[in-house]
Image 1: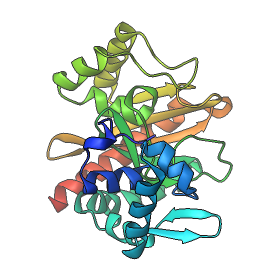
Image 2: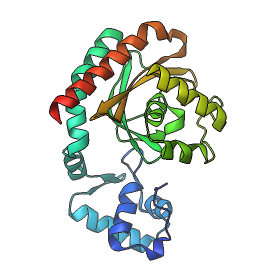
Image 3: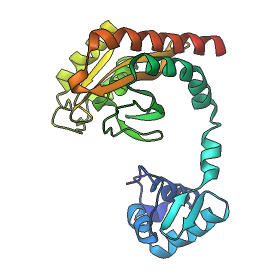
Length: 252
């Protein structure tokens, strides 16, 4: 479902077009006309007109099995300055972390109350994970999200603690007092831990990445719970995040 919450009847053409593009989350397609119309709460005639216009400029492509997001969106997305510079700084350290562990490595940033994943290196024996590049998950259910939240301003923390906490599994933290304690532990240790809060059978360790003194991203390593070894993995994650932070400082 799209993140736009306003009444579709009151949206501009540009907003409706974005609503259509946003309907392709999380896979990018294929979607049928009826799927797009239903997800956007738009009449089929309106959805068809918008899809036709978006197809004409390459933002959407049409195949026999349905509509897909177009390559032009990928081209534009790959040159967004903030994420581009972050990825360039982070990738060498992510590859080093992967080579040292052969586990799945993530890089994510905050967007509102969610984590958006900007890079992922899949482990050789990776297990099923709900994360993917360009996808988003709640801050409070992920190691990266908790690391970012812990180093955010008090206003954001108060906002999150004042809302019903989202649940992805039975282990997700839904008690605000418990989450507040966890955030304090993260601030003290410089590391965030997650055990089966985003995916049953999985665990991760995350560390914040700083740019100009602000937590601009976080790095994590995800492993099956059965081989989760924090004492071995935590120093490597923390060192890699520190390396990325230093690299970003040199480029600012």
